[in-house]
Length: 512
Ligand code: XMP
Image 1 (cartoon, helix red, strand yellow):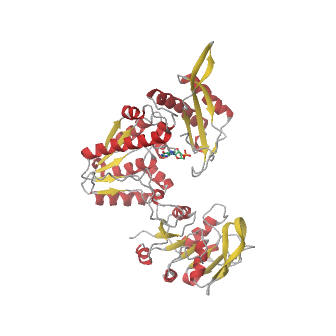
Image 2 (image 1 turned 120 degrees about the vertical axis):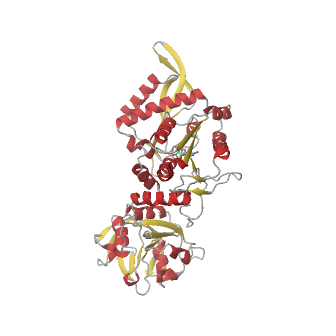
Image 3 (image 1 turned 90 degrees about the vertical axis):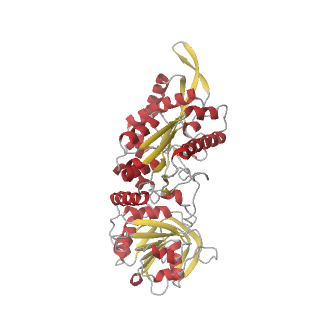
């Protein structure tokens, strides 16, 4: 049986991925398609519901994203959001007007049609989130207005017989008080879905599909120790066991103990061939004398692919190549064009002289939180499933200036103390990312009666939702004090610890 699918038709709004996540939170499988998808292609998904997203434009502009009005005649429930609502009105023959001022932010919403399926269990007046200049001034024939705000006479409209619904506000953002309820009502009251899409069925279905696709061939996967490639490895191991080989290139630039954790996890807990290539020396020799951050990144990236592909070229070309691409990697958010592929470290194109039977991306339809849920169900340790983001070039960009084995070691030790103290304090879950940096400068200190001249360690801790902006974390002073004392006492060649109190912007999260 085909799984129940809802299509989010992307007209370029900024919350498109959020809409899809909200749908999936209700146990309904959902995909984002660009508005350039033809009606025929869209029908192949046999969607049980369609959501038109917001978008930045006015429907009357020629360059604005449009769609054939035939979509309204499919007898499939549709919910239009913001621009999507206006588009539905425009397609149905209604009128859109340009307001003199933009309505933005929290606004009081009044439900004027309480019997509406969309507004079941929604209070008559509540707060919603608006962000628009244009509004529906005349609803199309057959539509009834079902909610309004002070400045927006048609904040919601519907044509229940045709299963068409539209809201000018954004139900997907948390500021809309009953937003989740409204989306839930669309899925269950309007579309009549069962909400039975769960991670268990994802694992079973994917394992069966992987087995059928792979047959008796081999699969090779580049394991970085990050969440996505680790979960992909665990899933493939469940599907084909020893037919899977994971290649883990350890550049010697991970945090203390992380390389060993990856090795122990995959050799100890999962059935697969595991190959760890230790190549710190090669990486460091390439980095000798290099101080420019961009050059360091380039060298580390190039060297990584050289080592990896040399190994693959020599041994594993007959079977499949797997990688941990996840859904957001494939979506260019906010461009109304979900088909565009981002260049991203998760998506690697094999060099021209390496040939595979095919590429396998078992997580390509999942969001990060769903990937984590799958990882937990497959029994991956918490440290891997909830691992903080870690830059591809690793500690190479946290040792400022030239990278040497000694500096990497000092940084790993200081960073391990930081992690230990933060974990003990129970403060870990409230930080998005935290780590130590070795700025590479020395300062004067005094220990006992002797003058010292040793390294400074900087501590960085940030809170953020998306890493595009970030605020420095207000870590309690006593915790900072313990971290500083322990680093100076336990890590050789360090005599000073400082705390980075720079937000992003103007700073970045990493120092390089
Ligand atoms: P910045 O420093 O740009 O970091 O504010 C934002 C987030 O991205 C991570 N980061 C990287 N991740 N390769 C990666 O895969 C990189 O080169 C890289 N540089 C930064 C950083 O750790 C933070 O989470």
